[in-house]
Image (cartoon, rainbow, N blue to C red; front, side, top):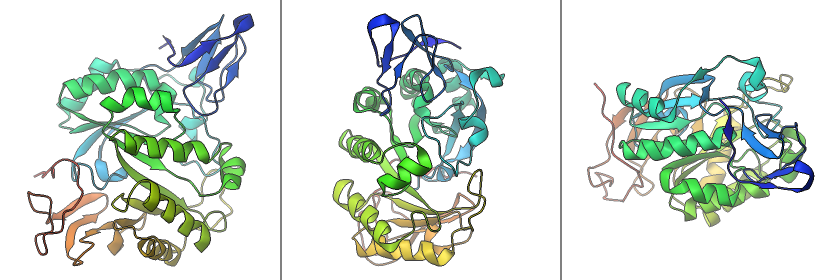
Length: 342
């Protein structure tokens, strides 16, 4: 579904400049941006994927991952195609590398999206599977309607959104699960075709604007797993987003154009968590390792088990109604209520 884009400038000779993501593409007439889903048609920039749902499911919020946002709740999760990154390890490359003419998507209006989320018993709408800014206009319209209907909203994002686009949607966006893929410009340039600095800027801004932020780092052997880099990342999160920001170190598995690499050793993830704790972070998780004790939430003061998780589900929830540790009274930063499901 074609829809005029937001955040672009008209230039001479029918060229346009897209200001939605940090690439800020200058696009010739008849051409598309790096994302492949925004096209200049005679001097007007259009989104080619408004409401074009390529992937859809009802999912546990923990899958995003969002561990401190409405624990145990369900998110109506939708994604489209296209991406402004070129990650060599992309897990959803069949979506991110697809072109609009390659698919026959379901067209779902923002109104229909919210209705289906409510009918499915979900507590929030999640734009995920591919980068949400690819269909920013749709997410913006959908987020406003979702909030009016009493639903939460969240992005699972690479964080390459521009400040002006983030500032506009922030009043309607509750949570921001941002993938800081490495703490190296070299990694971003060679592995993702992007830059690190705009991701850090967007993460800081989301926090400043009152959006709940959780940071994800996929730890890839020999690429972003050095102790120094993990320490720099952890220190940056501590200094810029705060010690209570949930920080997820997730296990890499060989995929797409990085099949030659091994899966991340669990001891590397344990080391990453230990480094983050040393740097002052209080809620650090190990992901993509089923049954690992550090997919659980523990009180940072007394060590009591507060939330037990397994297979991306809450199995036990021990935080008090006042959002404190029931043993020592330490305040626990949780957004929203526990969604107990029978």
